[in-house]
Length: 561
Ligand code: ATP
Ligand code: MG
Image (tube, rainbow, N blue to C red; front, side):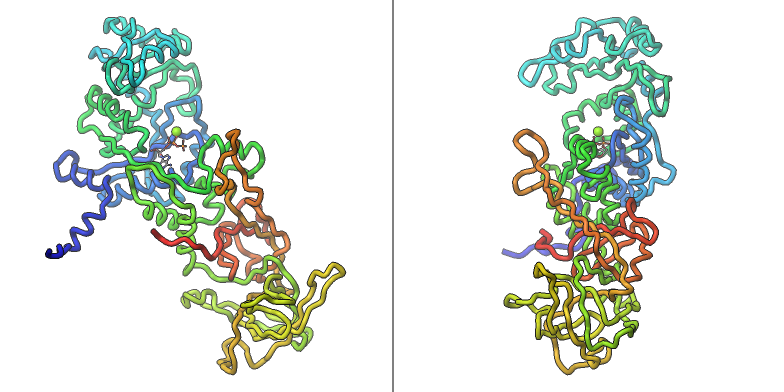
């Protein structure tokens, strides 16, 4: 059989995700002559990595098709929404780089138009005021096997409905006393179509409109109208709204919008190893297990930013996840892979000793100090070099010395020679211990001939270790993180509480870093050689006293699928 030859154009065509294929079909068939997407968060909490996917997806599509991207607060439910969240959400969207220019909107600005749409439906005989209680409405609705029962108020006249709805708006009725319902089909196999409630009475102040309204539209009615008002073409949402699509289409059609938007659903992003549910995060915050919604162990966008993730790494991650119609969980290690890849070439590789023990070079002149030139990034010459002080007394990692080494241990042990990165070869001569047998000082001698950069080729050593000069090093706090829940044993205990990992945070207060790092500012990030990537904490750092959060360690068994 002849092997099919794939034209490069076709290959590119095939790699388009299903949403792009739908959009291109719509453009080709003239359904729309432009593309306009939106990100519509409800300001009832902080955004998380799943929202980042939605933001970047919608923004990316608008860019790809030379369209527009709207950023709209879906703030139609005053019970749950707060201005505090509006601010944090705006900050997060900006930080991710989704440039909404001046296209920031509030659904609550459309309350008047939504009201008019409701009146139009009433006039068309497509909506009615219903006096059933919430519970009765639920009973009448039926379920998957039983068709619904029509409300006794379903056949009120248009005039009566107009009058009652007007009264609802004027504040004549108490919360729950009356609702406005769409008149669709109580026998529909789709329960969402069984005369859904579209307006309710709620005597409540709204963060934007204050006390102007005491009736508020329901999500399924408000959302399509918001999209239509803004001339959105493709309203992209997550899978749980698939069953609501017929209602979405009904609303834009019956409200007589020209060129109405269409809804396309994709699968939510879930991650292993982390907690995303608002309910759980709130509990962690309230119980003081984490130090806020931006605790670096969480995956809110604020937490990822504080931890040291970059917008580029999140963008890459979202691209790698792709867009799918089937729910699944993505390995957290893939997110870590993305930040590692992003920082690898960009960040200087500094020396920091997290668990220090002193190394004394006995044949190095006492009181002498020299500045050594070391490369900032051995894989990227463009980052240049820096000067690092070197002297007789250094700090090295405690684990880089062993009195009795196991096989294949190439670091310091009596008689063994190693390279001090960017400096000299040193040979271990022994150690001092305290009364409990803990090593307090390691001793060594150095060979001046072996200075880094001197071209010395006399012999080779198997181990290279990092170090800092003891009297110039800056003492700092470093924080290391693990998963907040114990994924191995399952995220939840039998009683439904979170199965917390007791080791999710390790605070090291006795770390020594190169003097250059003393001036690091919030959000600055670095590789600490051999220990991982670290970022200066934006909340707990003080001038001249940076706190470093480990973003990610250097190694992982993760491979791209
Ligand atoms: P959550 O309950 O997790 O806060 P939500 O859907 O209630 O999520 P909204 O503010 O209503 O949050 O959602 C804003 C947009 O983000 C919606 O279009 C929603 O579909 C999308 N979104 C929310 N969670 C995810 C996720 N995990 N993956 C992809 N998109 C998501
Ligand atoms: Mg929500």
